[in-house]
Image (cartoon, rainbow, N blue to C red):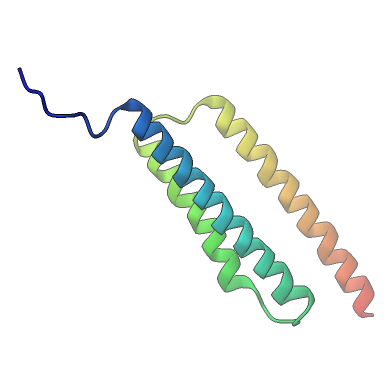
Length: 101
């Protein structure tokens, strides 16, 4: 029998994963705020930063899909969000086109 102390257990892994989640959310929403700032205040094209946000979510989804942990509910919610985002983008494009006239 060994008397070595346990350095990592389930609780440690759980706390680490929660920290990673918070860090990811902070970075993603920070990038989204920079996208809005660049677009609205500085009139710059923010697509480089926006692509980073999208790819960050894509890497996460691909990893989870590879390990087969995505369920049917995830697919349905993701499809609904994508449709809603496309609708909002279309409305914003129409509003911006009308304002430029």
